[in-house]
Length: 414
Image (cartoon, rainbow, N blue to C red):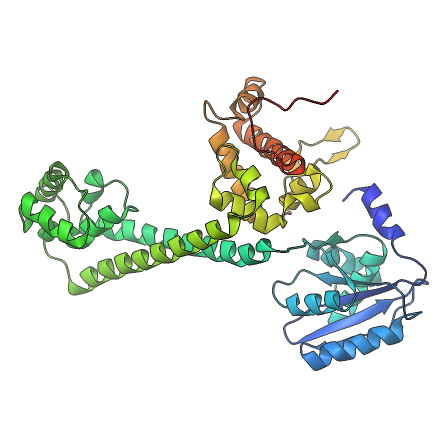
């Protein structure tokens, strides 16, 4: 937030503008109005019900200097508690803005030189920060982005859960059949998990010949497992340090994990198919995916987290949303290094970083830029962060100009 932008936001507050701060909660919100002369109203409790919202509308009407006075409402980020109230206020003609929780926390002691806090005090601080122009706008979602965000969020949660179960599966295999992973290094493919379900213990791997093992696996659907691989698995079982006999509980645990992973894989695949369907008619998604390294899921994350790059005035705004904007501390002769703020959307930043890692490889579009930074002595992590920022600028330019990526830059009209 630069000084210029704060001044611009402050200029929006006119003498007849009503500024309201709301401290959000699960059951009862607290609202306070701030007038242009610096005076405040007493705290007003707003139940998180329709009746409470209607009462707040009447109170806002009573607080206005004129019936057509503009209303700007500041809220603190509190997860899902205020989603319905924010939507209600926006539908009833109020402009709703976001006040960072960190600003509210640091402002508490400045208000009354006291460390205490309560809902009325927080609402007052929020209103004061809005009046001073220290707020952020909400990311506007429309069209397919409204559908994409919950799907992308759910997919990310399922992928995290899947990773946890795979880690647990590795731990179980380390106990029951440690040598299994010398033959099947990756347990993620369905064929590897089918083999593990059938022959995941030392005794099961030794109970049948490789030919019989392949027949059983073909019946289960793992037809791509070669006979040579099954022979290596049986040889590994003969030399295994794993137990020859396992308890029923251990076998049950192994099969439950495999069934859970199969279910998760199916749910993730279904979500990805729906996400691809939503992306298909979007021209912006096509522009994003034209760059090597950005697939449908990465494009979906970018669209869901930003609401579409076209609604931003410049690429720097997107960088700030992703927490990639740089800051530096300096005082007197001391000057620190530059760091990214990491105060933006972590899922967007993670997606951009993974694309940057891919682009650090030889033959990828941004690899020359990365190599030049490393050659200048920049640490690799710093170079990757710079690639992330350049990636944002490139994607923003593609969407702004309405074109797909090309290795040859477009010709500038004379």
